[in-house]
Length: 176
Image (spheres, rainbow, N blue to C red):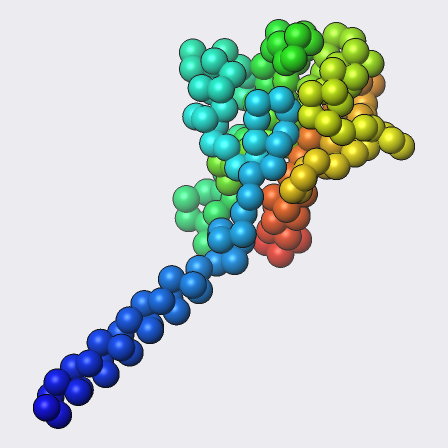
């Protein structure tokens, strides 16, 4: 009887530890929720998922930047990939799409439409937001804004605020 009691107690302790261990996952992984970006795209999507979504499997995009530390780097993983696709149609608007991936998760989209005002109106209607004072928000974590790049080209941008904060924190802590 004593052996049975010891086995039951051991089993209860083991099960309790298993339950606690599964609940102790990294809170960022556990709490991550994809947030809408450009129409049809969500934060957290991989490059492969975006290629399928936008029918870019043939590699019909340019790599603007692919920043990866050396394999001997001892810091936590960091990859910043920026791709660009010319002649991308989003919601019947023609333009150029630039996508930024942080650690293989889609974080930011910038769209340079041929007609910025028409594109903003179309996206506002589709995604149910209103740009006021140059920006807006989409639930759960998207900041939407209208801006100009370094060449003064107008664009509409979407970024996942949580992923952006993670990237900024990495740069603050480990960047040189």
